Length: 375
Ligand code: MG
Image (tube, rainbow, N blue to C red; front, side, top):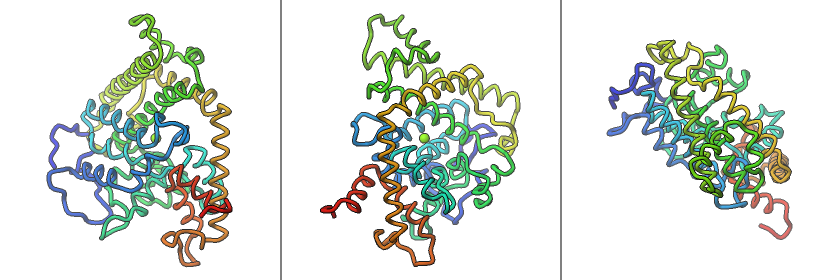
């Protein structure tokens, strides 16, 4: 589909590197709209609803899940992409797919699975997202996976080790040559940060694990909460928090758009190839980058390392490790569709099975394997 309004440095269907398997041109939608549609219809996408980032799914109905997180990332990324005349459909597709490979139980689960896979090539969630869209989804007659465009797949692999990059072929080249992905991919990366910093503040306050008083030490929060209080003296509770986080998100998004626009104006990339060779052009100003860093440090200290979060994380790690040990010791415990002939890479297959689990499925499966009287 012709999209004349895109900037010369945007990715378009015309300059796309295409798909691995030939696929007929879609009618009435662009290739990147089709990628987005395939992602939304995938099984892995639906599972995001029951996977978490920081809090475990059963702890409350109002916390972010990976699904709502991915929607927030897509919303932020699309706004930024459109303002810069970049490919909004591509930004949306990457955002919706970026967490598809995440294990149950957020970072705790990813760490545990990576430890389990140490002797078998490790486990990286970005690569697992790629593996999901390239291989694991079983939906189409002609190919495994979703057969997405190169640029969507490139955006999904935010980072990876050099060793893995060598195995990825064309997709891994940029890590070896130290070049950049498309501007749309760069946007998704920072939209992810904007989304999780802000929703973790919101969820952390809701859970009572962090307080407004503690957050006063974070410059970005202090500045915007003061602005809200000046406008609405006496405002408290949920409205005060939301009026503050919406201002923080807006400030970050506007800063990112303005800083990126001026980087583009300075470097004048004429096309996507020039974008790849330029330094990263999507960026915050120095002030806001520092502000984001301070916020992250605050969240690490006060939320991610809160003893209640750590307790849940340690339970989660035990569940993942137990499942991995049981399944690799006896692959016949796996559901038949996950069993491989004896010479296959059983550990990777077990990792695929575990990574695909939702939080509650992992808890259930653990009970089924270890609790006498459960089946
Ligand atoms: Mg994310």
